[in-house]
Length: 248
Image 1: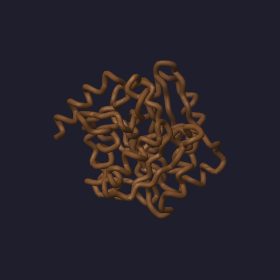
Image 2: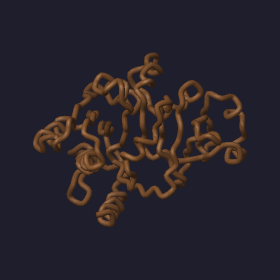
Image 3: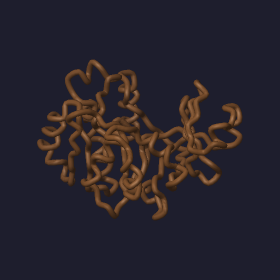
């Protein structure tokens, strides 16, 4: 599944006239770059959620014959459902027997997606690609790389269903738990849909993972050599072009 429903407000004024998914990087829209990478690495059935300038995405895929892939659209016409709500709404578009690779449309990386997808075992409910990237918000894992919580080191906020994690002083978190930054790429098991039944229409997937990590097997996979660009702001477009040029 490719998340392509975002407003792309940080990419204004470009996104005043087009969706973030169609913002070009070195002449090719982000959506095309992600789709062709997925296709090259063996993924042929794709769900794309759409909201902002949805007709433009529909026309673009139609004009390009879906790039020879089985692409199904999940329409979020009334409101953006955020990442968790987007997955929940698209439930019927997925196979109930296969794990789902989730990928943000604005992420360019050196990740071999097929290899990462295969890292999720039969018993893993979710596998999150993480790295040691510097940020203020980190996911927290135990020694087995099982998710136990989240923290914002700039505010001292900690979220976790585990009391011992919530009560750990912020300065001790690093010594007790592993801190890694989320990449926006993850594998989601259909088993998790059962946990979503009680959730509202709109919610974030990271909050969902954190709230259910004591019940479901949600783990992190560290890519130490991760090279990634989040094309979320105007000034990252030049970085993205340099990234693409060096990767070709």
